[in-house]
Length: 146
Image 1 (spheres, rainbow, N blue to C red):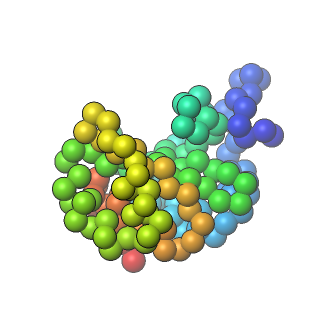
Image 2 (cartoon, one colour):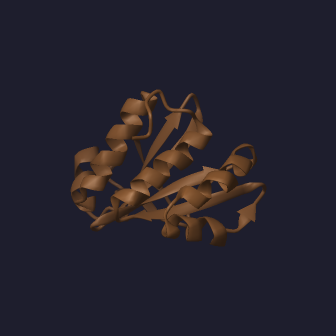
Image 3 (tube, helix red, strand yellow):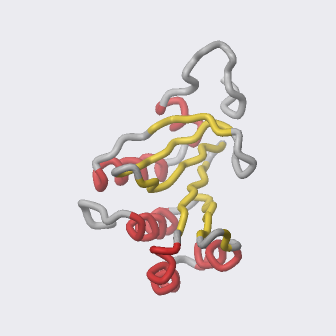
């Protein structure tokens, strides 16, 4: 199945296992398992035609608030985390503890309507740890981010 094209057959699209196979990275399971356990949430697979990353994605929400969106790609994935006005001051404080890569994404992402939409490519465990910290700014997890 072409995961970048929405099927017109009425199908619901790929399932979670198909997306996991496309990504083919243990980091996918590491982050998704953490989100499900730490926030008691389940993934929601959706098709998006948005200009940032059109195609199938996996959304995680808690109590109606978006935690993050995962965009499966061949061999890796991208995560969208929105830093809103409420989180910005704390994000500015903790961003210096993040990897150079995540710091660069944060500093080069333009702010619009009081938000930063961070599109972070996940290719190493350090980035997963940074994402856990950024997501925790939006909603506090039930479990520590270890």
